[in-house]
Length: 153
Image (cartoon, rainbow, N blue to C red; front, side, top):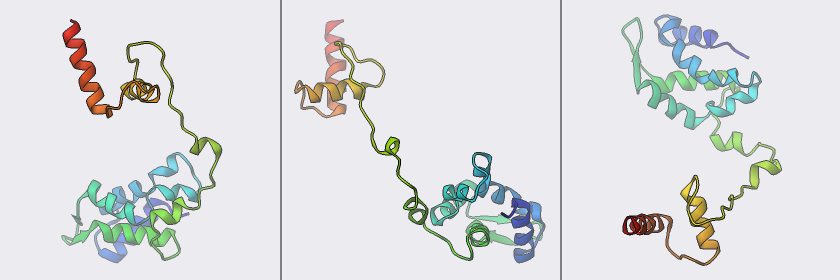
């Protein structure tokens, strides 16, 4: 597994300037190693969407110490290709390889008893809908509740 410094040195050879011109971008791509120091950490940013996210974080270009303006996407593409055997995978390439576990698929809505909503108002609204006490959408239901509270005060 390449270290971000090795990627930065590669960028300096390819685009000019010095490694420190590129270090922060390569650190960003590999930041997920802090949580999982296995190659699978790459699923977070080593894909086409990650390249565009890098542009949003660092801007469309950077000007290196040699005065050359370099597209951030080029730097990201170089990083991803070096780590992914010359290719730029899609996010779907990574996500479809996740082994599903039961905890990933079965969400639930906590049911709250009582008249007043507690915590997330979506829980109280869902309870009202499930019980057949409202056909209002969440936004309209919340507005109606606020109006009732104002009239009761």
